[in-house]
Image 1 (cartoon, rainbow, N blue to C red):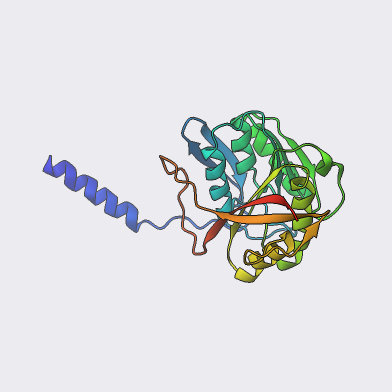
Image 2 (cartoon, rainbow, N blue to C red):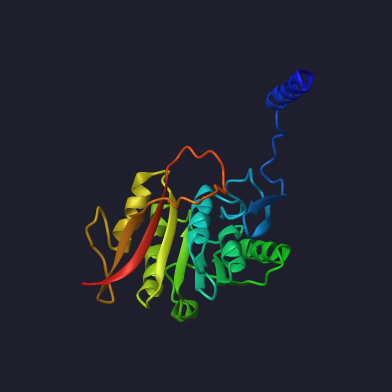
Length: 245
């Protein structure tokens, strides 16, 4: 038994010292995620890529894991009508669809939308995908939604106003908004709070006589941790709702 233990220890040390291959930024790989009760999810991604063709949607970002944990923690997603903004590789929307939600995944990049369709099909799903530019009038926003969600989409102060308008158009019709945001720059998240209607707990923006209330939520505490990774920046989970003024 002692010899066996030494062999295991020796192999363990060998694996620790092994250098993992470095992927080129353009390398495409199918990443596998395993979720209790849902099984495997397969996503074609470019995990070493930051930006390509003006989009960041070819890899799964850290905030998507937090929003996915929130989706998994909900007791009943079956039949929920969900609009996802900046859906990227599709992880969050695919999880919601597997839980029975009626999901529409959107992005501003046609290339990302094509990838979304491919990833949905790769997981045996047919999910509606649409092009959507934040801040613009779109018939999609006038539909009846239960949730409007997004992860890692507050990446630039310049887009926060348009993003807040898009949330407002849906939330003011009765939906609840959820946003998972990686805080790489505190000013960017502050800009979204201001544009949404709440900066440092003070409502400052009125949209059609109703204000948006932004509330930070505690991180879900699942019985079993699903997603692991190292993120040097904090990730916040925000709930966005309409309040009469």
